Length: 112
Length: 115
Image: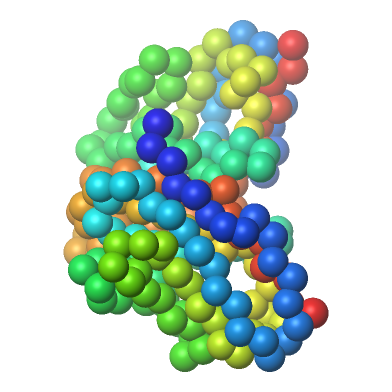
């Protein structure tokens, strides 16, 4: 059964700093990888996805995937107080109808 | 952006009663999902639903659970009868299509408390 683990559990970065979030998965048939962000009182909202090894950049956010080492990461450049939220890594297997396995989340606090 | 609405936001019921959780998915979406999150734990897949049928379900989707979307109205999760271990936040999601590249849009969740 797929296991998705995130680290660290919580992270504090100064405004303008770089936040780095990590995620490991266990199933080598994993195909698509998502980062979701959840602000208090809201549902998770998709930030970005990645499926090929390497980096994918969208604005201040960069995802990195290394399937061989079963690792995906999210880096947030120039962090803003509005980035303070719970971040989830979610993984889907090939052949599944978009059935996601979520990690437990990393709580990010960006301090002015 | 696209919004998924969940009603109610909080439901309190006595063990053994029936409960129906309602979800208003994004209007043109065709695939629907329920996820369960017990306090302090990660969100877990329950079921996905397309064209009036359950496509996949997890072992958490017990026999007491059922889903339906009659005539394009709310997508519902019914639990009958409820048990104490059903206390959790239930998140509904929808997507335009079923492939793994399609974004899931989540509602804000319904917190179910079974007493």
